[in-house]
Length: 302
Image 1 (cartoon, one colour):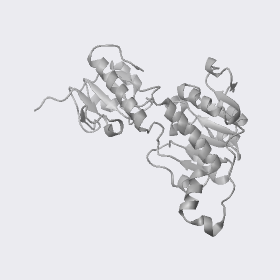
Image 2 (image 1 turned 90 degrees about the horizontal axis):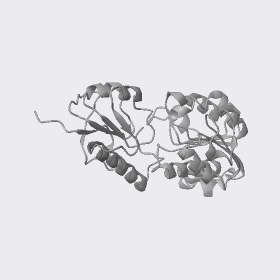
Image 3 (image 1 turned 30 degrees about the vertical axis):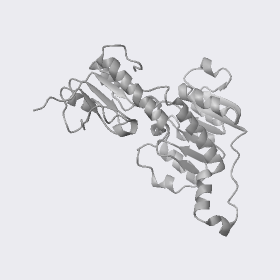
């Protein structure tokens, strides 16, 4: 039997230019003794997969979020974890603002209106909303939240934010001490917190109701952060004005009800999906792997 490689790719290596660095394993059905490092681009590595790779000592994520990795089990087994922060911040922040403008000006619907030949038959479409001159609330003022805030300044009358405590980086913004208080204040709520159990359902039914029929919800974080059924019901009934969504609760499956709504803009989790950023993410993965195999400090450990 041939000796197994030291490195495995968990899934989707082609998205990050990493297909050449190892072999692809499905650890849910295939044991992999001898593997010491794993690369994952989003599906993560759970406890069962770690059990299938008893020699695993490193998980290199080509994403920022690590909510799909069983961090507690990894630490108990002495497995290091790295991710790719910073290099995707600008692209994700750009998309958040792009979704805000798209929703306000109804760009997906206007595009479809032209493509379907309805303009000459029906005349001009219904009026959209102004994208500027609104209160913009940012849920989470980490790296991405700060980048969104900087981009939002030319559009906003005021910028507010929520985090678990006031941040020095937010001194020029308005702090609200709960997601509910931020939603009550904001016209546009942009979700930029990390995923995981600690933020699951943070944008609750009450938060969505507080945002209201003239409010807009933008989510470029994780689908788990938003109570998706409550959001869909509010969008359908007009209790929430509009939404721009890059992420969903059960990707890649998007609820049929969302597909039928005209007050939403839907994107298939494309926050970091530019050639430049994916190349930078892949390079950071490789640099972390090189440091690991050389016995040097990891560049971006979790």
